[in-house]
Length: 320
Image (cartoon, rainbow, N blue to C red):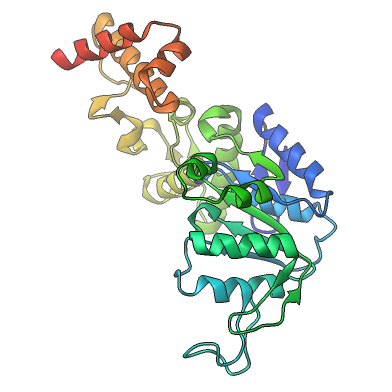
């Protein structure tokens, strides 16, 4: 499945990501529902937001985006809600519409909502509840009609427990949540994404690079901590730095070959004793499980072994 949007393309060959697309398309038609998009950095939250807008009754109305973590804390209120003339030193004499006013009738996308300061969370909650904004320095509420889509790569439930995010705002935003799986959990999308980005980058630089078949396995076995954004950046780097027109395994960055300074099991070029190879693969699997699960106990459950087995094997590796 390939969906072309205004600023990008969604590739959805994997079952998990197809479900995300289908949910977004279904939710889009429920015009008044606030949507919370969750996912790691680089998974494509902006593209899913655009998909929601393009399939909604507001698709021809304003669609404005803001990164809540990129605006200085002393300016974020005026950026979101606007200000009246003379509201503060340096304010425009004509006043200024905020994001919500400017998007009236359309959609506001609040990216990195987890970075919104607590005092602004209170004011955003009031806007969502009352459907009115009051400009900085103003007293008259202004009616607004906007759909809100929010996104974050943070664990908002944990932030709520730690007092870093308001529980009432979390529930107000989380009418419908769309969870985007990381790229390492949808490997079926890697080759189609490679082909798509290779076409785009070749057009950009007027090149004719191709990827040799032995390189595909390395791409599919790499964990992609930066997800689709990282894949796109790696591919552009390879097109620029690879001599000739064929991108081969030896052209890949070091991170594809090693982990913690040791040769990676996948793509290992030296012949090692089988016992050593098995130990390295085993250790890599254990470390990956711990990274994903967050604890030895949970990793052991995922791997189907006792926690003591993991501890013993890791300790044995350190002693060598």
